[in-house]
Length: 189
Length: 62
Image 1 (cartoon, rainbow over the protein chains, first blue to last red):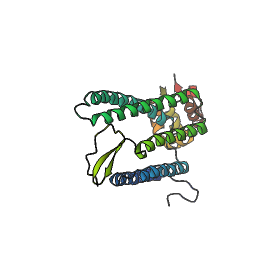
Image 2 (cartoon, one colour; image 1 turned 45 degrees about the vertical axis):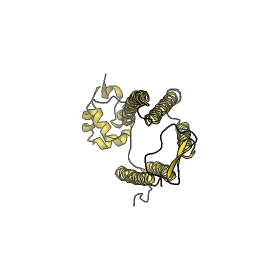
Image 3 (cartoon, helix red, strand yellow; image 1 turned 180 degrees about the horizontal axis):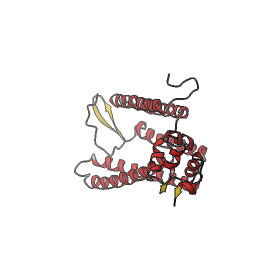
Image 4 (tube, chains in turn orange, blue; image 1 turned 90 degrees about the vertical axis):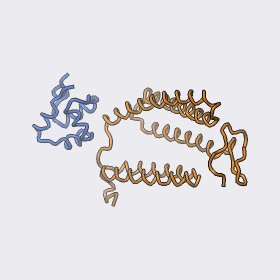
C-alpha cells in the first residue's frame, strides 16, 4: 500500500511515485507526439500534478525546507538569466539568417515570445513575493492557477486554432490562412 | 557562521535526524548548519535553539 491506514506515506515512497509518474508522463507525451494528439498529454499533466499535490500532503517527513527554497531561488534566477541570454542571442542570429532558411523565422519568434513570457512571469512572481506576505498561501495558489490557465489558454489557442497553418489535404500540404513558415517536411497522410 | 550545534547536540545525545525533526528541517540542512556552510533564517535559528534547550546567542557565534 502506498498510503497506510493513517493516510501518510514516507518520503522515499513519494520519491518513487514521483519517478513513476514522470516515466508515465514521458511515455504518454512521446505517444501523443507520434499520434499528433495534444489533449491527452495536457489532461494527463494536470491529473498527474493533482495526484502529486495530494500525495505531497500525505508525506510524513519534510520534503523541502528553507535551505532548499533558498537554493531553488538562486538556481531559478540563474536558469532564467542563462535561458534569456541564450534565447535572445539565438533569436537575433536566427532572425538575421531567415533569408537563408525560412524555417529560422518561426523558431526565432518562438524564442522571442517564450523569453518575453518568461520574463513577464518572473517579474510578476518577484513583485508578488516582494509585496505580499509569504504566508498567504491561498493567494499564491490562486495566482498559480491563474497563470497556469493563462499559459494553457495561449498554448491551446496556438495548437488548436488552426489559423495560419498548413493542413493536410488529399496527400499534400495546403495553406490555411497565411502561415509565416514553410510547409512541414513530414509526409502528409 | 560558526556555531556550537554539533557540540550541544552530542551533549544531549541527539542524532542529526532527531534534531532535524525537532527543528522542522531535513537532516541535510543540519549537516550544512553544523559545518557552518549555511546561515539559517532567524526562525530556523530559533527552532534549533529551542530543540537544543539553548538560546540563539549561545549557539551561533557572531
